[in-house]
Image (cartoon, rainbow, N blue to C red; front, side):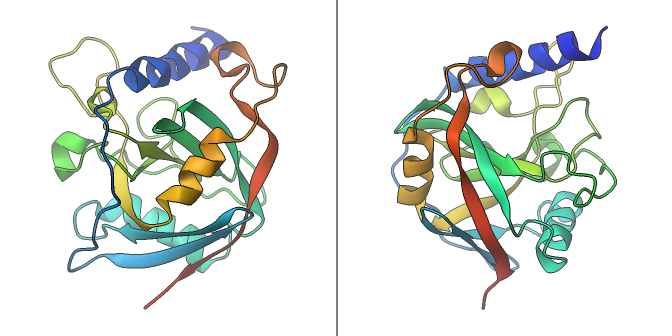
Length: 205
């Protein structure tokens, strides 16, 4: 299958999943074993709880990007949905100076996590291709979870963290103007006209 067609199919899955949301109102509280990380963005601060105990492979990968400052100066560049549901996507965008080797896919059927309000999950193509791009969910999107009974690529996306503060910032990013011409395939019209910079990503107490 041509790479571009495969990419379009996978990105279409994002859109389908966005239609399966169940609205939710608030960010989650951190749990024991979580690592707190603050993303200072051009629209404000987002604090997340990284679930290193529940999603050890994916969490360790994200924390490596944080600790090595590989996310500093990257951006949220994509938004899909309406102000109260959808997702925003950001990260390294395949920058060869930033990306680390792909990691093993940790499906939600393995971790017990789910794509609920404020979930952070890894962007990917085929399972095992995730590197340094992630997205934040607004609303509940069970269609992004692994579904072993479904045909084809049924592994879903790998949740590894949840927002604990700053969902208003996430909503502001999602509501930002989109370019009518940027992006390819189903991503056309989803790219932010002015990407929102991730100034720094740091662990916090």
